[in-house]
Image (cartoon, rainbow, N blue to C red; front, side, top):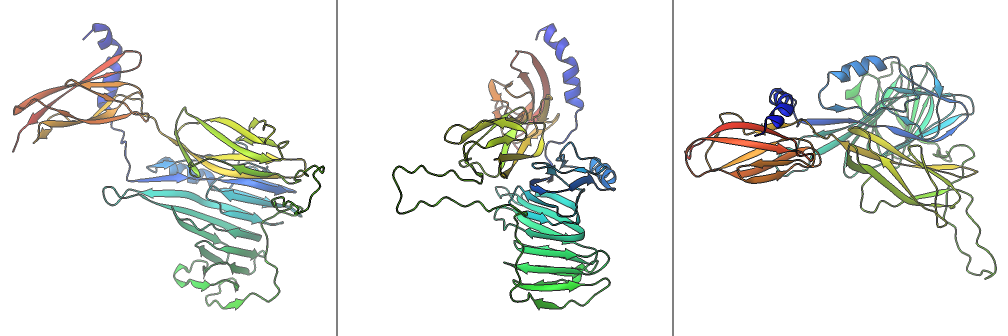
Length: 443
């Protein structure tokens, strides 16, 4: 052991030995965000008045990974723009002849009509620790939207890989949804009107969670202040359901070829922008590590459209194909906003980037000093800088990309106290040594 190595890593070794930060948590709570995929007229956004209180509570909560909303959102009202990320405790206000459409990473869509005030009260996912070894962890997506006044229409996507817990709340009612289209209308200081389509909604007067009633497809219910008994009625015949397009938007549709066409006639380019994102087998949530670069590629029609991913511009080729490299920030959950814009309209696709934490501190977790083993093997585990090598009892373990290492190493086949020396060498050939005295006793 060189004196130089001992001097360089003396401080690191001391910090490693006194570190008590847990690597694994029972539950992981990830705050999510929704993206503005359409905006028209005067729409403003701000953090709600209790935003700072909520952040202070989160600061002491264990296991919560915060997802920041767009950096331009403050506690003062400011203009809401296309592609902005809106997270928990953000309030959105629409003016006269103004509308906004929001979309979450799982495909849930919310359109807020004119003269409305709505708050994204809750938007997070909780992944509980697996109940049994080898069992898949269970994730519940929790979302609550508070409509203070005005009208909105929401389409909650039916999820297969996650359990949704989506609620809409007004001054007089609360509604729980499991994959349904809901229309909510709230006049200031008066009744709430809720309509359900393509599924079933559970509705209760505000503060009466134990008194939910079912409102099925094509049904409606109206809740007045202090009302306790709810009456479900049919939506009137001829009622025109609300749509998710903003005023002036046109639905994108594929171009159909005519059966009879002139060979000399040039094909017409589509007016509307259509964005097709090809991620292969990669799911909606892209997992990576801090410092990685995520490649986003796809095809856009027409090829003259402008493409950006989180503000990073890309120039599509003649065939409309594009590719954008997005650097991963520090650990947490972040939206990936892929936006296509033509002269007439814009279209957005939302994905989520999950950035894993990378351990760099040198720690030896197992074995602990004085551990007793009944077999001539010992589990060596800990954390170090990614790419380092861990040498112990003639065996070399590799440090994973997340900075963890683990492996069983054979012991000399003799009972008694055994000194285990672990050498951790990084890419620059700098090393640190940690020793543990353990005892091997068959029975």
